[in-house]
Image (cartoon, rainbow, N blue to C red; front, side):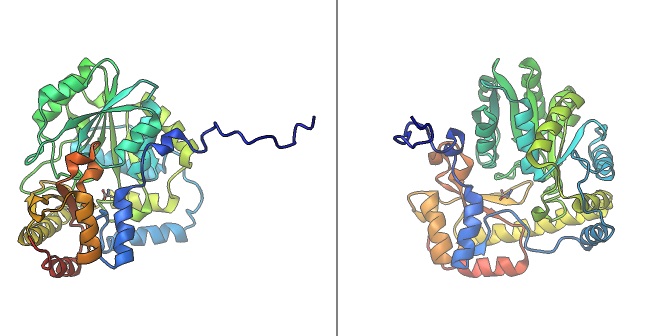
Length: 397
Ligand code: GLN
């Protein structure tokens, strides 16, 4: 018998990975594509449509010209890691060792995924506040964790401590949170962190905290890094990036800060996933991390004005807005428009009105929970706001 001769096709073997079948394409990224297709004003995906600071661009150009064009050290260029450690200590009072506690990754997206893959074992659970940034769902699936969701409830997006306590148990490996929060604009308070800390200590769990919007704060809100809360330093993985703070979302440079043993696992995962983030852009990052306090104050002030501008437009167009205290999104309630759900309304908005937003259901496990919400971003120029205002004025409510 010829072993190479084709027999009947084996049909029982699934063609694709069961994990990859368990989640859909990112709705946020899809909305950007629909915005391009229909020529809509894009208030969906959170990326600035204004220029990055001249200094960071100049530093990147200089690094390329100086031929820093080969691989950096896999876990990050030393100058950049040193600058990240200095800034973390300067702004949050947390001293970390750049040699053993920082991993530079391809954006916070990879930092989050590498961190999850570094700590998750089969059977592990992760507690996730909901609504959540949509990546955390696939992050859990791909790393093999079972998510346990705990609601942040409108209008102020607080959680019920008993509900949180009930979500923790012996299988809890970590809690994932994002402060300032996407999509709600919530900024976690110290008392909330102490509640989270007590549960993490009790159940010996990690916290993975995504702090990418740390400098976008309004109305006197203060950002607290979870790692700075007593008892959390040794069990916290802090995720951040250049993307939002320096308006360079396309550079894909982020990092994870974690205790040395955790960092060595993150570094191994990271190395085999991506080898490293773009070397010249890390050099530019090192320059940016030394920007003066004035840079961050101006950033927050300008974002506050953009928030107020978009709040005005949306409220005038009939949306009920949940005023954010941080980050650069406005979560809205769309009940007044009488559409059956968020997805049909988002499609109508992008196709017929010409404004793209993100359906609330992409931030919830059960789409029904987000069906009265739509998220708009305000990291945009006045020209974009003006165009959005003109189009939204056509909405009937
Ligand atoms: N964080 C941004 C958002 O929520 C976009 C992130 C992304 O698409 N990678 O819109």
